[in-house]
Each structure stands twice: as structure tokens, then as C-alpha cells.
Image (cartoon, rainbow, N blue to C red):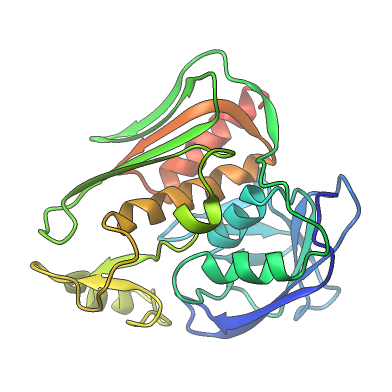
Amino acid sequence: MSTVSNICEVRGIGLHSGVTTTVTIVPTDPGTGRYFVRVDLPDAPQIPAHIANVSQTTLSTELSANGASVRTVEHLLATLAALGIEDARIEIDGAELPLLDGSAQVWVEEIVRSRTEPLTGNLARSGVLIEPVSIQQGDAFVMALPSSVLRFTYGIDFDVAAIGNQWHSWQPGKDDFSTEIAPARTFALAHQIEQLRSAGLIKGGSLDNALVCDERQWLNPPLRFPNEPCRHKLLDLIGDLSLLGKFPQAHFLAYKASHQLHVRLAQRLHEMGY
């Protein structure tokens, strides 16, 4: 069984909108995939969690279909994929998923609690990658390399002492997503916050749902991992690549990347038939 066993409900504030929404994950039939349903809109339009439906990648990933949109989907989608849940009806009464504590930890806890049988914890595979694929923008890049195992590796480099250069690698089936990746929270630089808010972003961001650091230190320690920011970027990558439906067996390697680059790689892989 690759869906949730029972209804799972989570409520919280959206990072960018600042609006409180309720998400209800409902069991669905095999083969239907993961899809969102805007239950607050007439006729409850569906938005399949598919790479073809990405409409925006500014500091989060947004999906649009059938005249409706849903934003900041990456943390929940990463969780569903990592827990082996291929089919899920995700009902939401607004346009943005709740950020919760800035990580995927609450999603994991609530989904596991809703199950009546153990989760497989296996990411669905679509085949073996046979040639390298890369997307680059300046010194930032994301690539997929042929590999004997499915692996994700991420590197970041910030010119602030509290973050600096960090790397992390995660191998599904070997490393536990729920303890190694899911708890890693989103992060922000203090000097960028006012600029982002003036652009209409992060209206729901706070020290309760994001790590914030200035030029010298974290404003709301302690961190859950020494390289928590890097692990969070890896979480975002998994969520964005999950829009393929299944993952090709490959080593996904990213450095200083973004939702836009993640999505461009997924689009390229989709064009290649993965």
C-alpha cells in the first residue's frame, strides 16, 4: 500500500502569505499519484504534483493547474516521497501550505501517526540514469550522475561566519529521512528580511519557523545539526525532484542551487523519459 492509511490533518501559517491553512491528506486509489485539491474554491480544482505544473520557484515551489495554484509544496512532497507514499489526495483550504516549524518533522510525525501499517521508506524508482545531466547558473549547479545507488548530496557556501561552507549527503534506505533530513529547518539572513518582506514575501516568517542569522551568529539557536542549513536545502531538493513522480537511480549533486535549478533538472530528466 503506497498511500496513507487514515486521514491526516495539519494546520499552520504559510511562510510567504502569512495565511493560516488546513491540509488534510486523504487515502486515495493506487496509481493516482500525489495531487492537491483546493477545497476552498468552486468545484474543488485538482493540482497534480507533477513537474509539468510548476508555475513559480521564487523562494519556494508553486504548482498551478485547472485555474488554481498551491505554493510551498516542497517539504510535504519530500516527506511523502521519502516515506514511500506514492498516492495521496492532499486537500487544502488556501493557496499555501503551512510552514510549521520550518522543517518536515511535523509532516513526518503526523503521517506516521496516521498509518496502520509500517511505511516502506523507499523512494519509488523510474529506472537507472545512463548519462550525466547538469544545469548550471554561474557557480551554482545541480546535476544527476550515473550511480550504483540513489544518493543526494548538497553543498552551500555563504559569506557569513555562522554558515560558511557546508555539505551533506543522504542515501535512502541507508540513512533515516525522519531523523537525518526531516528535522532541518529553513533559514534566512537577517539583512535580507526587510527586502523580502517589501517584495511581498515571507509574511509568515518568524523566529519560531525559521533559523535566522546575522553576520556573526544565529539569532535563535540551538541548531538541530551543525550543518542544518545544508540539510534543509537537501530536503528542498528531494521535494522538487519528487515532482517527477519516481526518481531515476542516480547521484543527485547540488551546489549553491535554488528551487529554479532543481526544477530545471527535473524538467530535463522528464524530457529524457525519467
